[in-house]
Image 1 (cartoon, rainbow, N blue to C red):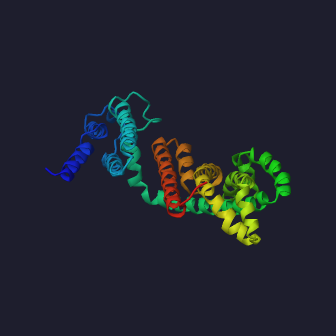
Image 2 (tube, helix red, strand yellow):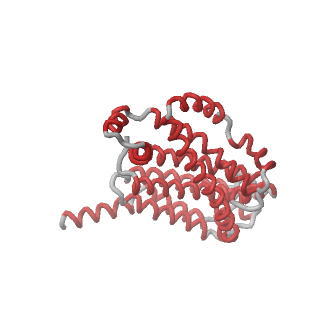
Image 3 (tube, rainbow, N blue to C red):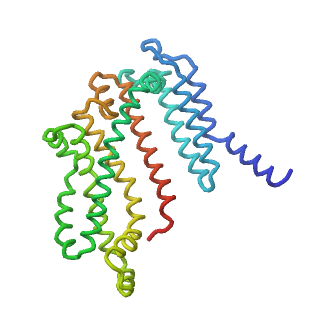
Length: 315
């Protein structure tokens, strides 16, 4: 057997014989065992739950094929499958918890099949609000941050004020913005804007204010104009930090959006969770919470890919 074929065989064995695969098989088998909860609750078709389990396994199989991420992928998959296994065993099979407050995973994930069109329309609405507020805060925060950070006197005057204002979370005055704005759309965008603007603004002031003096002095020796200084020196210098901060800012924006939608929206993924809680439909509430987590994860992955494509340097 050649070395290449041996490596392929070892790699295939490593994917098929490991703890995550064993936990996946145990979870699928457990789904088809008799259920005590079924004596009191109507159980949904487990196909959606099995699909989630299978998708998780395939996803981490793909991750296992990437160099350097094998052990991490196995560990993450193990944690996820242990969670699903315990959830299924404690609720559906043993019926140890109140089924109203802790629904079975089969019922939770089957909600996506029943309500997929409603949830996708809510997602489209939420993404519109999220991206509008987030992009506006990013553009304005970066632009003003560079301008203020570049002028020492202005930086010394503005930064302490911005620092004081930023200590107040946007969700504190969010209800007030919802009340005074003419539409909920405008209010949501404004709440999301303020939720991420101050951190972006202050980070840019700090980044520009602490730029290596040798870079600035070299540019001055070359007699570059202000436009070149801003767009060809300062902006490339700050771009890695901007992309890095986007992950945190996006999570804050999503949290702020969900809060805003739970106050006064009539659609959106935050509204979906609030409506489910209002009607004590905790099965759909769980589904909405998982859905929000998946959306945030996908957006974070997008930012990571964007960083790899755009940023080839760091400081």
